[in-house]
Image 1 (cartoon, rainbow, N blue to C red):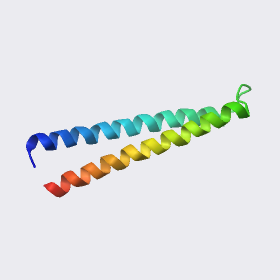
Image 2 (tube, helix red, strand yellow):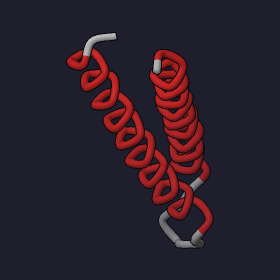
Image 3 (cartoon, rainbow, N blue to C red):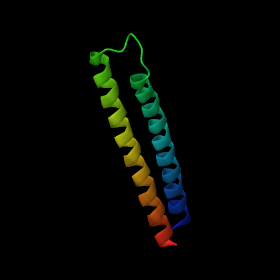
Length: 78
């Protein structure tokens, strides 16, 4: 494998991890908005917050698995 191709894959791994951690942090804040009791949280607001939390966790998992896949591919080529 070429050196430039390895660099591109390494940059993708870093980017996917960064996206994953960002989405994970955002989902934690959304989940905290659901579990911290306030007067303004109604069932109409809770459903979109929980849906958003689940979607963001799913996307975070997707990006982490892509990073792991690229890392395994990079290690197998060496």
